[in-house]
Amino acid sequence: MRRLLAYLWPYRALIAGALVFLILNSILQVAGPLLTKIAIDRYLAPNPARFHTPIDPLLSADPLTGLTQVALLYMAALFGIFLFEFAQMYIMQYIGQKAMFDLRRELMTHLQRLDIAFYDRNPVGRLVTRVTTDIDVLNELFASGLVTILGDVLTLGFVVFTMLQLSPALTGIVLAVLPFVILATIQFRRSVAQSYRRIRVAIARINAYLQEHIVGIAVLHLFNREKKSCQEFDQINRQHMAAFKDTIVAYGWFYPVVEFLSALALASILAYGGWWVERGGVTIGVVVAFLQYATRFFRPIQDLSEKYNILQSAMASSERVFKLLYTEVAIAVPRQAPRRLPDTAARIEFEGV
Image (cartoon, rainbow, N blue to C red; front, top):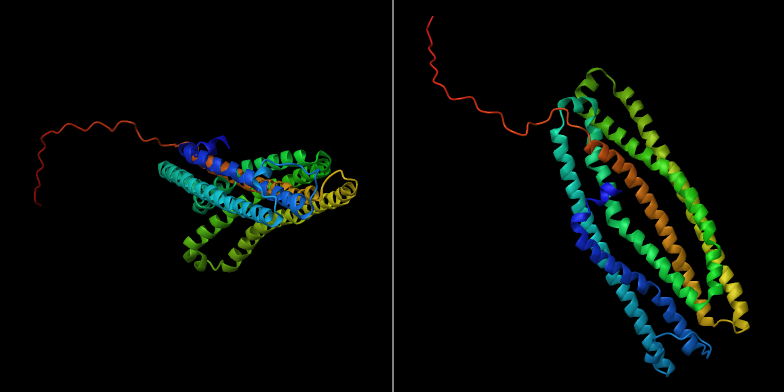
């Protein structure tokens, strides 16, 4: 990771701008449920014991006017989320392309410096995979992985802080299922870590096999090895399928588990919140806001798991890219050009036979 981050350092000013948009986006993510709570507790089901917010003095006392103001603020928050997320994604995609351009250029330059014996030991298809497919995986990490991980963490922090301000008891209900989510995420991580490494190896083998047999198609026909080559390719292709099926199984059980825990938290909020509303402990607006915050709470956790998968795949690719990039050059080019031989007079004679 430290080696990969070195390719982002030249674009640190753009990354700082993306982080600013990311923080603003995370702040606006918590505004929607809070505005919903204000509309319910202030206008739809007025409650004098409601939790007061800084924007209360700015809202009208008339219900119709006040609801219109809240609706406009909600729309402004949604537009701000769209604008900030678009700017952040555009900048990070641009940075990812620039960083991958630099890495591909460095890798191509290094390949041209390697000696001929290196290419005798390494299939060309495998080297092509390093420069193309593996670099594309790293681009996905730069464009949608690193910065968005920070965004998910910030969103989680703002959501938990706002929930604690509204109701610590209901916040405790949401956080009660968090250990189970963490355990499921840890098991999910272990399941997919090795699978991604196997996938990268299998893709390299497929490309190398295809390159060798397409280039040598004349020899293949000459020795009548079409059927044998298809059988060998089927085995290599099946290894890739098996590795990918393991990740599909991991995805298949992880997301339903998180969805079930999320639904369990929502049901607990409805049950306990409804009981507490009858006793005047919380308002209806707070319960409605918590239902929305609970959804926003579990969504970043799922995104973090997805980003971890991108990280695992990128680490598997980067291991292979940097192994190639740091291959020692056996025949080094001299730093100084050899001295020219002195110009001397020479005389050549040709004699006929």
